[in-house]
Length: 245
Image (cartoon, rainbow, N blue to C red; front, side):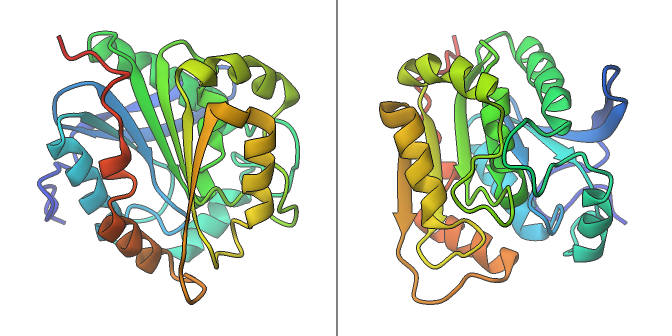
């Protein structure tokens, strides 16, 4: 495989990050210059559409950090995601409590912030990785959280899938650095009840957007295509929380 993807991102450029407290280790691909934005892929892995989204964010003037959780690069792969979920790094059914991957993500946030001049970090989660954004928001370094179709936990559509402690820590912070959340109106993986809970819990600390769609966006690649067409999340990244000077 050509290490240079079709979207101008060198897939061999990056580092391996280990969280000693949990033993979780993942490769992180990096590209671009500017304040740090961590973009976590969906259940289908690092697909071409995902990498194109990363390129768009990078070209806006950010350095992107792309954790590679599972699956082959530049391909759609559901099998790898199923095996990954069996490792329990994401609590797919738990209604309360942070996923084990949360602490690894916080370690990455601290490193990305330090590498990019301590200007603050933005974190974007898509579908399977959406709700983990809230776990990262407890860090002072994280100044922007974007949840696109947060699908976890499964089987409990109104739950947020994070601990009460996490909720308490980010309630006041979100009034200064609000979170953003997006879903498609017909998406059963991310039901409207979850967004009701988000609004009731964080009130002015979360800004939600529900995009009207006529059909269920079952295919994740199709979902990303729709996101790109309406400018989400790349055009929704506010630059005001960051200082580039």
